[in-house]
Amino acid sequence: MEQSFWWIMSETFIAALFVFVLASFAGLEVITKVPPTLHTPLMSGANAISGIAVIGAMVVAGPDHLNLTVWLGLIAIVFATINVVGGFMVTDRMLQMFKK
Amino acid sequence: MESFIPTTIQLSYLGATALFFLGLKKLGSPATARQGNTLAAGGMLIAVVATLLDLQVVNYPMIGGAIALGSIIGVIAAKKVAMTDMPQMVGLLNGLGGAASALVAIAEFYRLLGEGNVPLNATITAILGSLIGGITFTGSAIAFAKLQGLITGKPVSLPGQQIINIFLFASFIAGSGLLLFNPLNTVAFLAITAIALVLGLFLVLPIGGGDMPVVISLLNSLSGLAASAAGFVVMNNVLIIAGALVGASGLILTEIMCKGMNRSLPNVLFSAFGATAAGGGGGATADGGDKSVHKIDAEEGAMMLGYARSVVIVPGYGMAVAQAQHSVRELADQLEKKGVDVKYAIHPVAGRMPGHMNVLLAEANVSYGQLHDMDDINPEFERTDVALVIGANDVVNPDAKTDSSSPIYGMPILEVDKAKNTIVIKRSLKPGYAGIDNNLFYRDNTMMYFGSAKEAVGQLVSEVKQL
Image (cartoon, each protein chain N blue to C red):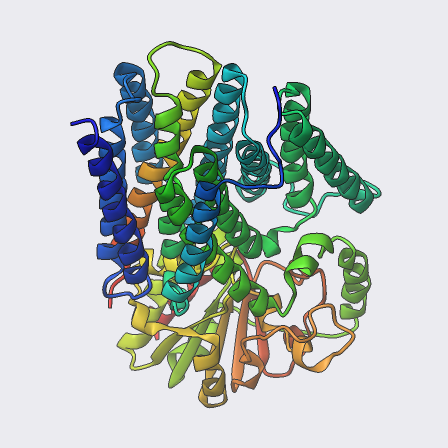
């Protein structure tokens, strides 16, 4: 197999880099002022969002013939779903307790 | 139809992304936080359902089974976990997220290997994905074990730890280099994945329990970056954006926590704080033997509190360990009945994760209006009759302001020493996490009330009732 000019990144990759950098800046702006009361729920809620990896896991586990990739994907789905469901629910449980 | 489905999926992802932004924004304000969390969860649901439409995703029974299994475990964990165990829970969830992201990167890499052609972009991103995800996974596992008490909370490091870490990192770079020139070198890929896992262990093991707020925030940030890296591997914008968002929020929390300790992130990560200071702490306690403390019992304590006009309660990790938050609330209720003005002062790094004390007090039905940040409450101590310190130590140590030789010099503290009187509830005179003696305990207007937070506060409650 011949390696393409390896220092040249594809256009889609560069586009994705743009998305990443812009999203990071947007993230820093959205979350700047959080009162300490909400530090824990913010962390666990954000953590649940990072379980978005479940989407990637579903795609790699997508084919219906089992091979190493699919098995790894299925394990990733279980982990990510615990992260998502557990994270959002426990955040809700905490926020329910906060009273004025 | 062929182009309709991909378009629908992408537009759904766009909607999900918008909901994540909106949700996080709303999580920043107490009035809207719950709604924000629900919106973000809705975004996640949309993204998952949209992915099921993907024509490549056809393995429904197994995917459905995996989702069901994960959901059941998630629901049980979220319902069962005690509020005092929340730091471990967050640590564990961070780790699972990191592991999932790493697995996605690895799985995709193997899929491309099977096709015999791994583009360079995919190799780079798979390397990054397994590095960040791997470190997040094992690092979080260690943080969980420390917080759960499965292993010692004290810093643990091998002799020459720094050199070992540098060597491991150099090996990782070398392995990555090999892989970039020949992506079919699976041995190199497995080796760098293993190195990433070991690095996660070695990065968190030398960090002590009191620095956990920083570590948990940092791992939170990394779990986001891991998702982003996985997004680059499978070229999926919603993963990249959501991951970047979480990375940013974790970074902000990490910065707040570092500021709360007046230490830099590298200092927290690499100084094994608390291990070296412990020797010095022994000496300091020996000195403490010459100094005398004023001891009081529950009756005297109750008199001081009950007849005060204003009381500020300063909770620390000791309150969490003893699960004393409900007793503390009860004490505050009794005092308020007697016309005492009660406030709570919360140090940003009190406890084992950002906002730890706030969550516990909220569980005990304390309204968040009564909880005050360090900057708000510090000017008020001068007008406070009694500051009641419950299981906190380093965050109220006046040496941080006055003694430039103290390891915690420069750390912002709650200035309880300015209150007219201070009552400290503590199990013993043992130094706190930083391993240093606390001069507060030997002051003339400081009263020590020795005992476990829960019993001590419980006794105060019954004595106050009898006043």
